[in-house]
Length: 381
Image 1 (cartoon, rainbow, N blue to C red):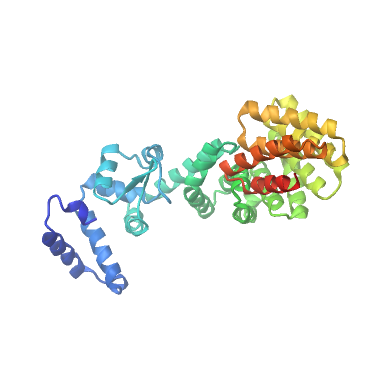
Image 2 (cartoon, one colour):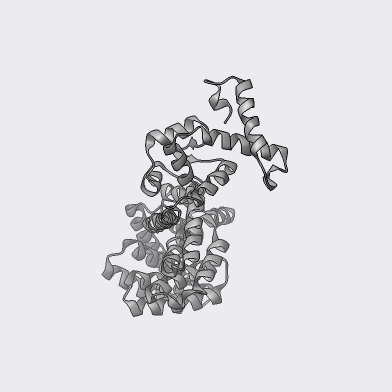
């Protein structure tokens, strides 16, 4: 902060001005000399800003973990020249396409934000933006989308907190459901479970459609953490609500989830019925991703039954669908299962090739469970 002013002030002049700020400090923050000096430097730097720069600095504190230019322009009406000026004065940083503040500076700016008359409306705009952001990336099926969600995960968490505090339960439940695939892929299972549980405790006044999404989020998180009984109960409630409101994509999603839970509990025949029903519905809807998921799981349980020809045909169908739609996440279980089928058939080189591809792809999108499965398969080979 001080170095940013050396083009117009000598070190002695900078020291003098910071010293003047130190003399004005009062209260508990003055206890630690280092914190006292830091706060004085921030305050001094802030006072040298133009009115437009001061306003933008305060508004930017609505973001947690930084933001893209597009988000800054939409939510806080940032002007690029003003943003650049804040970067040049070291109050805002810019790296990897994102604008962000050191936490000490953001704390200072947040105090200023709370004093702005538009603070409440900025919070609402921020939460609404990141709900739409998450919903548009609901599938989280490529490395690029997963990276975007991870980069703005703190903003998404802040949006969740805002919805809870504002009593906007429908939005909170919708946000939880939108994050299901992302949470599962990047291992945010416990956080997702806690968020869904918390939202559902306040869901009495929520719409049936939003409650269906909340129970869907809980089912996915419970399944990922290994709580099959809870996952099945939540999926059953979600399925009933999705059917009640006529949400067919949600119905298809929960049929697949109930198939997974039932299969994990050892009832493969009943699981296959869920997958078959999901597949029929997906075909009727033209939902390629759900057709692929149903075929993939039907193939898996054909493999478990020992019907390798049917397992290979169904799994190759699923793999072709996921490759065609560019679903990097969906490709992985198909590769794993084809690798195991090849292993069972004694085609060791082909099995190793398929599992190595799955391992590489899983690592690329940071899908830890996929990495684990591929390593187990390669060990078996």
